[in-house]
Image (cartoon, helix red, strand yellow):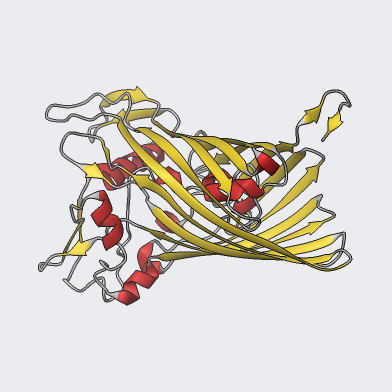
Length: 396
């Protein structure tokens, strides 16, 4: 119970209600002290895809499937099948508490001439389990079920044989202090926000000889671009607006074997924490557009610190007969910007319209630096299929 209370307390205080923290020395950031960018509703940046989760969380330019809605909505017109649906379950903080999890449901349907258009949807649900709130004197403040969720609806279109684009609209609801007995002078309320994703995808396959071929794909996506979110009447927080650019290269050696290497770069487009003359850290009060545009050059440490705000994901995927997959990856975040560094691995199996992906994050770090997904298995169940020809009882 103590661990659970500590977790929810830290989440509320650091992520939502506080706008200032303190550091020692006016140039601490330049000397390498942590200057992590924080936002509200960080669950929007938790990868809900076990395939990508096994590859170091790469997904901007990998082949399209039912989970493309999360990574890059522009990929969907290049999906192999006409319809797809995926369900993913991700335990969270498994080493501390048993009932915190992220659930994800996504699907798409292609239509139009040569299936060059698609509509897609997804829903994320993040549950913090059952929380018994207490104050510093161990007096009960109520019991609640903190939760957050988002709902997306997207449209994608292929513009040429090699290029496609898409847009997705998102509604976000965050009620992480539900059930808490409010005290005098507070006006806590659930937060609501709206966002949008824009994705672009380039995909070209080159035939070599017989069953040998190569594929190069490039993807870029601006995600969660939208309004701020508020939990009271006096303060608003940025949601995790993100810009990602990625590339993938696939080499198919023969009819049985192919391997893919992928690389993604991601940067939050929200203001960097600043330092005043006394060395105190604060978050600048900017509008959404000003914050996004200014995020490319507002780091106190200059260009060197701006580079450190870029996360890097790298992954490998090997397929045998397009039925069995082995995956591995690595995620890197600089020490002063969160210090998330971890290896991942996983397996995939595909049979007819059915696919199952499993991801495992290798334990790393300790204490507060331990990744919440350490020693955790993520599962994605996927169905992708073409329209059924009822007269013949088979796939078209």
